[in-house]
Length: 477
RNA sequence: GGCGGCGUACCCAAGUGGCAAGGGAGAGGUCUGCAAAACCUUUAUCCAGCGGUUCGAAUCCGCUCGCCGCCUCCA
Image 1 (cartoon, rainbow, N blue to C red):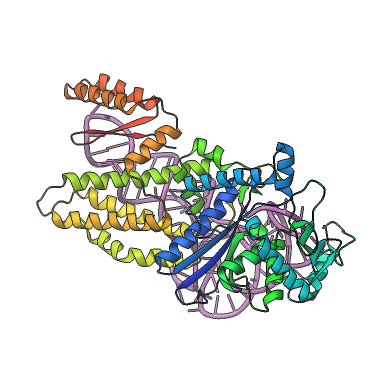
Image 2: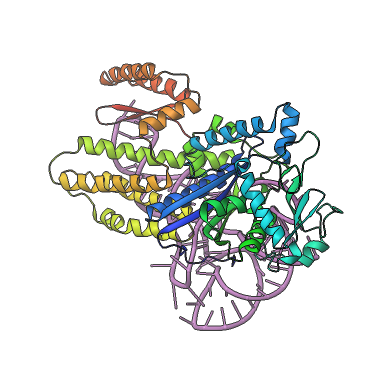
């Protein structure tokens, strides 16, 4: 609300109540929806990791003009559309490693609560009804505009909103809309109709989290009017502060412009996952701070893929070392690694405590990656060295767990890449080729060995000769 | 027009008044049958520009330029 970073202190010690605006279920989701979901997934995971109990509510708007329009176009009822795209949403989110919210309320399951909320506002004279519509009277709520830092005079002067003669002011917004012929409707004290958009969040957040709660989130485009209106409704009704901390994520841009349905410059999650591994997409979304705009491009996604591959390559190295390291105590150059290991968690916490700075946190992960590689390059052996590497490995897994990335085995990563990159080669055939090449190498038939390696490389598979074996990986980038 | 944000290397990107993280790309090297991977060295005397505050500014303040967003459904 202050527009600045503030120290986080939940209303109830140890318990965080968080409400995040979900989607309006009228079409498949694009990358912008994914960003919002991933950002708040990270926030939730990190708060839990820090020991808070978190109650996360994420709503689904399953009745609205666009859903009705889509239903009419597809010649089905509104609930068929809402159900279909809600399911698609959950499927996309699961692919991206976004955990489900604790409570996922649908608007249409809470008509009764919304009517109660609206009735309360009418009783308190913050709302008025005209011919079956009910509007919130913005001029009665004096701190209107505090979140979006707009003042009502400017808004009226520059109003691009449709002038609706029935409203007392162009700023007044609908709490309840009378239904037109053929539209879905529910009974209400004001006649047959349906709820306005903003009221569901007020009614449902209050039902599940109480009149005041800690975090309310969503995309930055929801600040005005949606969240401003929520504040007005909620605080007018209860007289209490609605939300302690507002968190809004920035946009995905394409050629520097906001990715949006209306501009038509959007890429659906589905189509991006045709070309990129889901972890790549999630990682990409974490490479910038959540409030900054983030430019979507193939180059960016490719970079993310390279970074993740660097991670898994190192994991493979660690695994190889632990399996093959000798027993003779050879310390290697461990001082830098030890130093980094003991500082690492503090650095990670510092980054994440500072407004969930995932980009900075990822930087530290790669510092550690370089350091462990350096250590392994120094050819250590023995129990102490192994312990140090295990410690590194556990730490990386731990942090990866919080961000919900880096949680595959390298094999799983490469198999997944094989699929995404549509490499037409069975693992069996691949291993056969490798074995043929090993025979050639033993006979020092370098030309034959190189031919096989080249053939595989053209298919997108890279071979790496190690001490006794040859490993394969999928070419990235 | 009102309000808000951003501008850091070839590209992406973090940056808390005190020596400019990290990734990618480039160049050179170590290793290797050759590669790949990894590591090392190197690439911003400087953070859009101009002023100011300060012992000290990418960071704070002011102005200018450029880009973007919200003000209408949007994540």
